Amino acid sequence: MLAELHKSTPEEAKEQRATLGLWLKSLREAKGLSQRDLADLLSLDYYTFISQLENGRGKIPSHRYGEWAEALGQEPRSFVRELLRYYEPLTYQILFEDAG
Image (cartoon, rainbow, N blue to C red):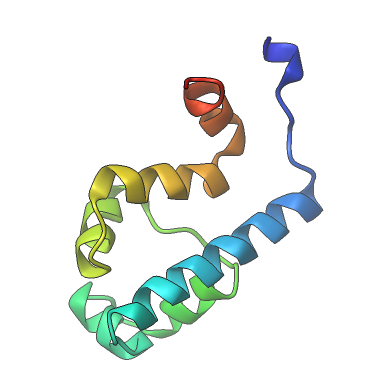
């Protein structure tokens, strides 16, 4: 069973981050927030961090997941599960795939 797990190549990991960035951007836009608005809600020093994430660079620090979920109007558990799908695909596979 564990032998079937797929480890991402660097190219796949980059593509996964880009996909996640598009998802984060869509959530932000659905809330009618600019990058600066979201940065302010999250007390970030630089709104450019939002841009970096939306362009597939960087990661949301895990200790801030709840704040991000709230700012983007998401239920925390499903929000973190989606982040995990892209940030830690092997962990995601172990925890959730074939779990029904």
